Length: 480
Image 1: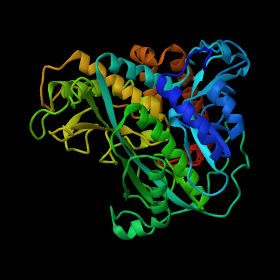
Image 2: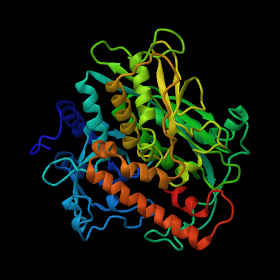
Image 3: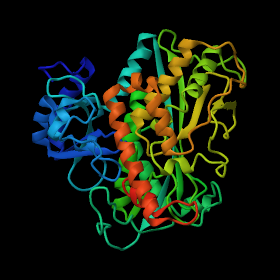
Image 4: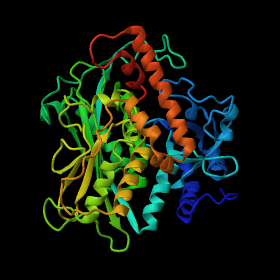
């Protein structure tokens, strides 16, 4: 860190505090977010972390090479076209801890801390495949215009009870996923917000709420959704970087805690479970002027948006199709974007207080904001948030001839499948500018591999009907 000057003053001050706090910690889990949105980590003794904190830590490039089923999707033996020389031979990169994310995890056992890191090449330059780096670049664009995005998280997910059974390793391998965890439902479902159904999950959800608050996350609500054991968790407004970090921490710690008490949490959009309803990730967003401290979206009256607010929302819609892959990255996620799920979007549109639109606008006062309802809960938080903020800023900079109107031009239909989304993603020059060519190429290869395995399975198994397939459930239910 000293050699390359990778920390700012705030991070350097946090590092000094950590050096003292390590006396009370036994282990540190050093984490980064892979392209799929999954946390990858190494655990080190606290004394070893003192060196890691100052010098970084070597990590294998494997998480950049494997698709969701751990099939090798990027050829590291030759020039795969990604354009990152250090991928050759699956060479190491350096993970640099961000001291501002360090915290001790609640719970019994050895005192363990968690810290997120940023990926760098060995010469100290930012890694072109870092998804956290993508968000940082977008936020720098906002800062240059004296703006700061504010994000609220609203996540739906499934809580199930683990059953006795094999670990799922039979038939497992590179691109060959074994059986998903065997689970039982928590309740029958389909009594929205029923207090009695919350009682059926409270023995897990209540201590989980205390854990999340103990992690410093601004928890607002936990409630029972429609599906059997389907929960929704919401958080108060955060700055965008903090929100993305919080989303990764939230998903990881929810799964960890539920597993520790004999349950399984999954952020898969539509599991292959009896009576399952689809889960979404609704991203609430507004923009604050750093000069005035005020929200730029309010239009001055109920159900109105300022010209800036309209322009931002129209930016979301204009890029809804080509950026869709970054908010809905799995085969399974597109099952939700279908007419049978009436509160899920199928068209790029916006309306005031309408949960059927892609973008629902709320308020008219200082809390006015847009809720983008397109995302699935397992999306990479850095890419999902960065792409939506990028689209919104593009709209802000383009301006809008309307102020407060929900009637806009005809925007393209949202993709109906991962294949359709990938085609739009691949053809988009704006995606290239957002991600950089190496990350775009890498993601394209990862998704092509995932789709090829899914198509091959369907051709071999010829599943009847149009429901969620066993392939999807094995691919996503456990990992996500």
